Length: 68
Image 1 (tube, helix red, strand yellow):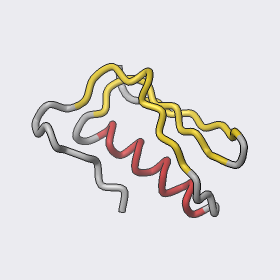
Image 2 (tube, rainbow, N blue to C red):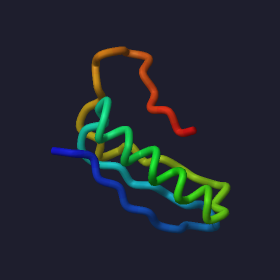
Image 3 (cartoon, helix red, strand yellow):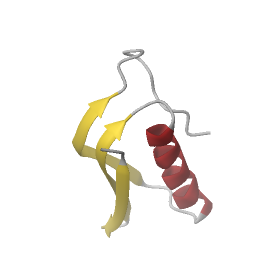
């Protein structure tokens, strides 16, 4: 299952609901593009909801996708 994202607004906060696998490559691209798009539209309060995320890439335990 590839990673999917959806966004919603609650009390001025943009919540990004993530589901599926966050992996090196496609999964991190979806996350990065979603956050970049929100920032370009002026959203400053962004919450990443990882509650439905199934797994994270295990290549590096400290791996965090680049958002810049």
